[in-house]
Length: 378
View 1 (cartoon, rainbow, N blue to C red):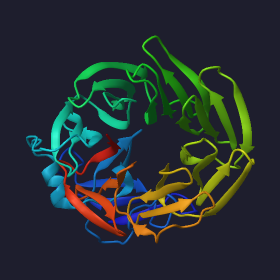
View 2: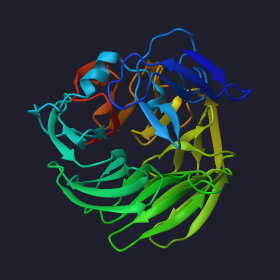
View 3: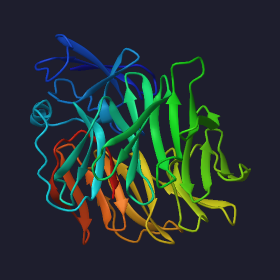
């Protein structure tokens, strides 16, 4: 393996690999993979010349990149092309997992990660949300270049409906707001145009409408309010019933991995390499350094929230609204994470279901596939 920098900053490199074994697909004898190096804001591949590695590759606009930015055990990849195992779960439904698993793209799991049923269908689930009442789930699905919105019954995963919402793009996140799945918000990044942009969509059986559009945006929902962070640093609060919009404060940069406190007063997220808490009542923000890949937050109490980074190395912390650490930080190797009242759960690249107990990260069981992209608690 050799590597060539694309920029003086060093964020993007071309890694040239000699192909020893192809698990699936046709790469030829040599492949060029574009990625960052470790230590960059989004993680990256080890640039040591001569290393033997295995990973999943994805191709976007003619460029190969590592799916998830992580190396994978070679034997795990070999298992990935085997037929899906028969469901072996015996417990109550605990999670919905989404990704691309051959003929399936979702699964319902019990509390130990065992499979109860598969959700069949083409494409890859890039985001999912459990609807209020927990009888329906919605998926954003990437099928070729198309972004599709799918509705599934729970816990059977019977496909109730599927429609295309954009002819091209990538579904980044989705929130279901109604028990029937008839009202959902989704963010879709569209790169194949003169000026790439992210669109915030409201999806219903009647129509799909654009609520906001910006070069980049992120959102969180609490009740009737949508909290929308724009790439110019503005934070918008939009009432989804009346349509009114206000700008309570400026964050300076795009906030990602956002979530809100139960009363809607505090908003957490990340601007670059900083963790931010915004007090919407006092119109002020607090922040502290945080370096990681795919950073996210989730409020777990009136004044406490969990913040984590996916990947290797990852990080998991419990903090309050003053950014005081309530427990020691944990090393978090999961690339897909779910937070519920029962705790924090994740899936790592070996396919293990992880959780935190008494300050330790423990393994609960082995999943049917390590290629779980999103995990949602039931």
